Length: 210
Image (cartoon, rainbow, N blue to C red):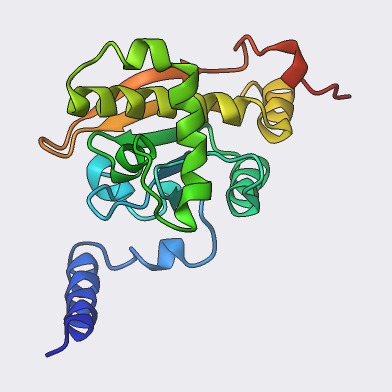
């Protein structure tokens, strides 16, 4: 049996198991989704949003990319953000990185990896802005993990700089933005930052809105 065929069989078993305990499970999701959270996470296969948070399908609206970045020119992410904030009315946005992130580690080197180099440059910028702190950390693994934290904080700030979030903050005092980091070795989440509509944003990034 091919590995992808096994996935289909596992899907059938999963669906049957759901129906065994709740015959209306899929019917409830048929016409509407009302997630409270938007999750911006890393594409790493070891950090699935629903599993690590113990939530059900329909609870979290998800966007994932390499190293969980919020890049201001990424139309994919901005489309997800706009839909989540303006249409789904999510109350909380979670940016979740993870310790030992390969993308962060790659950004700390001078190696050339191809197209992804352009994507990882955002992490290099975070490293440059925090060089003094980071280079005092001699252990490369600890330095990488600290950069993971600093990058998550930077991505949360990048969300706050968008007109999408600022308009929602002004009109409805939501969403809260949380920065989390996941420990792959034990499955636990830690919070590294929190921002809401009272967040102090540098004036150059503030939009004038009616």
